[in-house]
Image 1 (cartoon, rainbow, N blue to C red):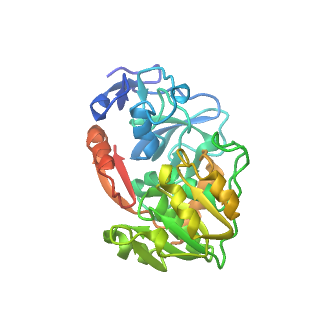
Image 2: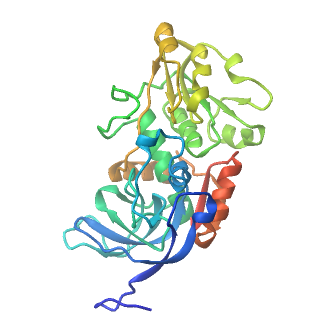
Image 3: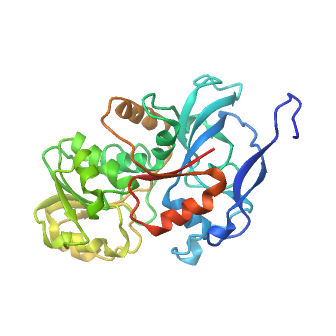
Length: 342
């Protein structure tokens, strides 16, 4: 084992890729342990949460126009969401100590050699929070991106970064007493949107497959629609807000369910083509792009610890088995989140 001047290891295991492609490009191999820069800590990773940008980046963001596709410096390490224990802090870091249990969404959106699918990751302290005490490392790693997405769409944006697909800043809407429909309610972002909307006093209509019904009712759904048996947009009307966690080109079908002055929030807005129709109906269509935010994660840790938010786990794989984790994701119908353990 190679050691540095202080006798610490310099090599770790990580999942790296040297080209874009399917799950076969994910390689479990040696990589250098990242160096801690100014304002950073080094985290020994216990668990990693998977998110759609992981597989989008793995295959080179094929769904984007060529000019938007990233030019990355291979080899890269995928992933953003981690939980673990701090093992080193930069000398100017005062907020965290060696031994602190933490969680984070690391450097999103970006890519490079120090990301989440690894035994160690360097993290800027601005993106870090103490791990919620009442859940394990797996649940903590599964939360950051999905929970921050739900929070920034619904509660508090917390940043000024524009969404490249819309000129205006995203603005959350008041939820108390409102009828809110959540499509894809059983998935990573969806199950958090259900809980936050319920917490804020909304009447929650959850759309998912039938196997998700009992868990979604347990976490706050007032009404459940099984999309495998019913067409949700034909079953509801006079809705104040639709959060479409599936998004894409089919989002426009929900416009007719909304009342005048209502809002449609597609979590994945690429491909939406109903802007003219929305304008005619007096409906706001708005999205944002999630950004790392340690202070929001700290606030969310309190909501997890007091039981307001539960983190649901679909499945767990060892880091070395990241290919199978990505294959599980490709099957769809995910209940909550997929995680890796280190």
